Length: 232
Figure 1 (tube, helix red, strand yellow):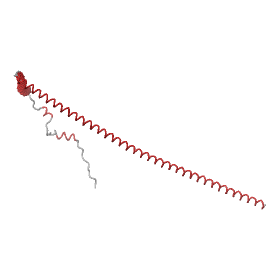
Figure 2 (tube, helix red, strand yellow):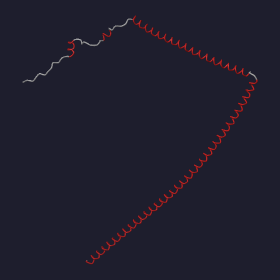
Figure 3 (cartoon, rainbow, N blue to C red):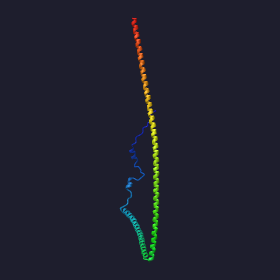
Figure 4 (cartoon, rainbow, N blue to C red):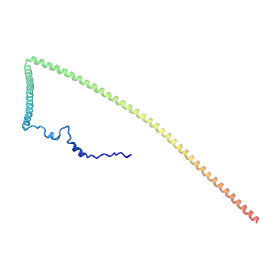
């Protein structure tokens, strides 16, 4: 049994595309875009004229609005001017009436003088009442200020007393602390002195023991030497 021939023939893709022919495109091509229908110069002029007409209509509408606004402004001004003229006329009438009243009979003048005197007396009474009220207010304010000053002085004295007591307490506490610290320092010094004494006594006892041992050893040596001489 022989092997199967799995080889495939090579196909040139460019040759295959040429054999198929031109590809059918679904969308418009560049040539279609270049050959599109375009307006002539006359049609372009007509479009521009139409645009100008539209802008002219807008300008006409704005001019009409401005004219209406100007008319309203003029009406408002006329109303204001007429109002000011009426107020000036009223003032002139009041002045004329006052002059006429001043030119009236002396009885009216006497009545006016009595009215003025009564009004002056009333004004004097009111002034006196105002002065009395002011004096009362000043008296009350001075009294309040003196009371507040007294209360402040009392509070200051109380604060000073409390501070003095606190200082005494703190001084007493400091004295106790200093005495305690001094007693502690004395105790530590005593302990250190005792330790030194104990260490010195131990050293002395050790030295004495060493000397005694040395003496005993030397005596034993001497005895041995003497016994050896006698034997010889």
